[in-house]
Image (cartoon, rainbow, N blue to C red; front, side, top):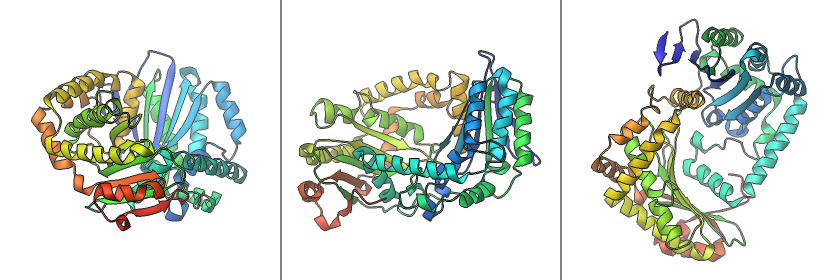
Length: 444
């Protein structure tokens, strides 16, 4: 064994295929345990988008010996919590229980991870719930616009797949296909266990060994390639009638977190559009002009470069001038970077807040999960503030200059095409025919 992040421990061998990381914490008589599998929405079959999400949820809905109701009642009696999150590249189960109840909790957790039954009645209910949630997303302009943007931006790449799935693919997912996916992907070779709390390390290791015994290592999921996107400006218009407000999403291919330029770009982005009222985009778009309640830029991170994106939602009457302004700001951002004052302010804010990213055992659990699932070096998040503090103004601006590609931006507008499409074309200096137009009702 080797020490990991001081109190963390690492266990792995050829016979024990699962990584186990544990931090002892006696502050409260509680145990937090996460079991993460390195399989997610990107591994869904094209005709079964949403499979990983349904798989995650269905594992909690019944085993060979217990129904969903019995599982929930048992967890309630223990005063325990157990839920599941599906991400693009992972499925994460999170549990919390009082130390004295860990033995009983681990038994039911083990049963769920080893013998899920995927009951047909529960699958029917879940598919109905998921369909309703997708419809709810499509009924909200902001989530609808981002759903369309991701699908359009990534095209045939797995990152285009929405985690929750699509209306046209949810019906294709069956109990049999979920069982097949579970058998193929969810095993010791794809499993990572991270825990913290008032318990002995040996108890966590014993739980892990039982999971490994029941779910021996099999094949690994295919690796994800770097997205290949067009290296030119692209424009999409999502046509939705009778809109008084538009949704604007603009982006380009992102950068990996372990890239040498990431910290510099993260700091620069914080100054440019990081969400505070002092950020440049918020100041220019909202504070000075009142065109949009918010204007934000951010990175979407994954194991491969994913997205750098900005987002605003102006009134229809302000859309063209807001779009023009933010595109001009992006060009100036690439050309001149951020000012010395912006640099100092962003660095001070981010460095001062960095300590809050790992000041509790639970946050350190999340950091460790992130580091392992995204292939980051050990201590990446703990050292984040120090890396930011070491940056110079010129380093930051040099990174921005080489990264931002104003002539390769993907520009997506959701609004009423009859009112705005020709104006968007004129604003961008392109022929209206170059704009790819889709109906808001299409299932991206």
